[in-house]
Length: 233
Image 1 (cartoon, rainbow, N blue to C red):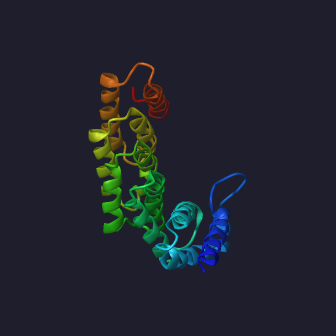
Image 2 (image 1 turned 60 degrees about the horizontal axis):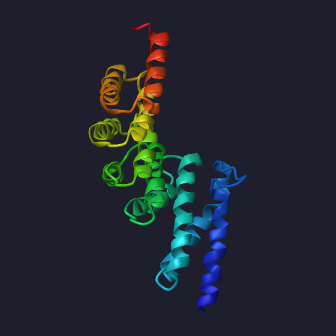
């Protein structure tokens, strides 16, 4: 029986591959819709066989989390679509998965995408994003920083809170460099708040970043673009 259960989980892992950005795969809304039933089958299999076959289950779980992040990225379902609850549940579980860090990395961006799709970041998503903002993994914090502008319309207070937390606590300039992307996109709709954060990051870079760090180039580009757009020297 164990061999049959193992084969089933391997088959389900293969069924998730169209939902993963690997090789020549192109994940879009149509792909997410067509392969959604595989998500539900995987959840059921993990509940049944996870304790019996932990190694195979761990691999299937990793595929499932990655697939859910891609669904959140591409599916154009209505905000009240019930399937968002499943995606949310899986990504929230992944946000607390200690090993491997790739699952928390997927959750860091995926949960912001779910909030964007549903129109709000609920208490559980907000709490998870706050934890991920302090995660020990550089790649997790990098992924979280990358997506923060997604929260501009649905949870702006949370967005500014997370931006400020990264500015105060982030030890890696590569993460702050990534954070400049969302901050620069916020200049158009929230110029005063965005400029304030931009100046804080610029001050940190000027004081502490090595001269050859890419953050200086990013800052120069943002300032030049804003000067050309607004004429504000």
